[in-house]
Length: 133
Image (cartoon, rainbow, N blue to C red):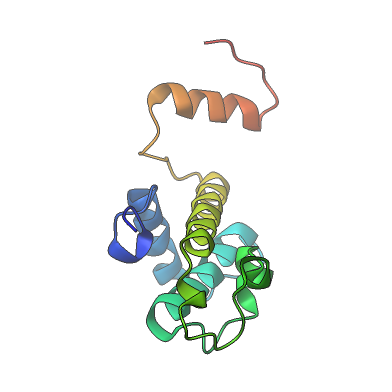
């Protein structure tokens, strides 16, 4: 599977790297930045998935990332290929995309992967303005 964060080429990779700098400066992110905190937790789960096969954070896939493994036929310590089902991994990547975007919005980080048109439309949408471009 290509275009994944684990290979440092996710859909919003540059934006994620900018957000990670904020996390490393702050260490453990507190309640004043809930979306950045969620991103930090999602990164921990994502790392455990790709490095340890979810041995440590299986339950957090659902609670933090928002993907229910059992819906994809993935069960705890399922080492016979179930953990790496393409549909499950794609769902994880798409949710990571959403979590990155939410954290970027919260922190005011420019989503450089968007065109100027997309940034303007997102800005207008966040403020409840209907923009016709």
